[in-house]
Image (cartoon, rainbow, N blue to C red):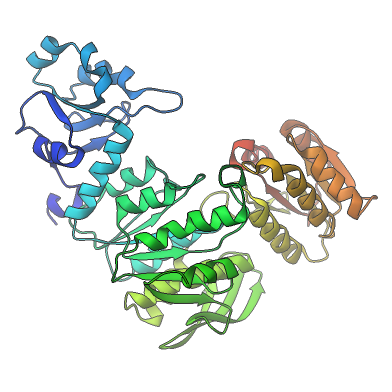
Length: 469
């Protein structure tokens, strides 16, 4: 297969000017580039460097470094134009383009790339499960089509464009994750990726600090549906009443999935097994048994969303089954590890109240009558609801028949208060990650089950790594 089909599409300077509406300050308009990069550490000499201004670093401060590395193309904020070493760069035949905002320009480049690529887009959002749903969907779609998907959770105004800039000639579908923590973000990302299919997994209590209320979250997620192409389809969770309410407000075709009888793609006979969860997948075209190699009732819902996309794209039941059963969860998402014959559930990737609740319910089911412990870290971005929602997690933990509750973070006392109200005799340990690890190491016995979960910035994965060591 030629490079045309296996490498990202090349760029001319004229393409870049057309996409960004920028000004050519230096260089030849006929110059070409093999791709786009924002990372001065890994950029190739034949790529264009986009100097993004981040919260910590300003990419422009590395402009001189990349030129010294042999890079011959830069996209900068217009306000920096007067500080350029014009003559020096002109001698090196550097192409320099100025725009008002390099972050927006990165999105403009991605939109240009999406439009010129012979590709269709599935865009996935939701309060919980969107990364697993994205990965499952990509596993299904790739059974029939060459598929590009979001790496990890590169789902914001930087990550989504970087994903679209990886498109090459062989791709037929892109499966993209759209994240947000404030109004307008989903709509902005959808304007960049132009979705043919939009998926909403659920609407729950996440990012309340930036969105104010569950109604604010509902409106923010609903921005995706307004951006689906007119002849496109919304794939929606029939088991989430807020998602169903959104369906009543759009003119696009809707395909429902879920456990509800109103769902065209649904699951029956769901069974938790030692190796995962199984169910019968009901499609409009028939039924087939599915054995997921992952744990958690909520994973069935994610699998149904992926199956609905596969069905809409014309995949057979066998192709959908093969894709779902091939799925492996990402690091830190309900990964079960056996350490000294104890079972550790590593769900440290992130946390919000509803994902924490789902994890605790799965943990209780998996541990059965064995001794268990929950290690809970703070959940972020809850604003004025933080104290009450951490207290709720404490109460739920105490109801899960555990022997010990470990808590760390700013809201540890709120979690402890909720737990004590439910069970005043529960053994509760509050401390740092290091203190928890030391105590847990002495407490843990063969056959025990431990759930470890908290928001990503809490670094709960360090407890998992400590146990491994």
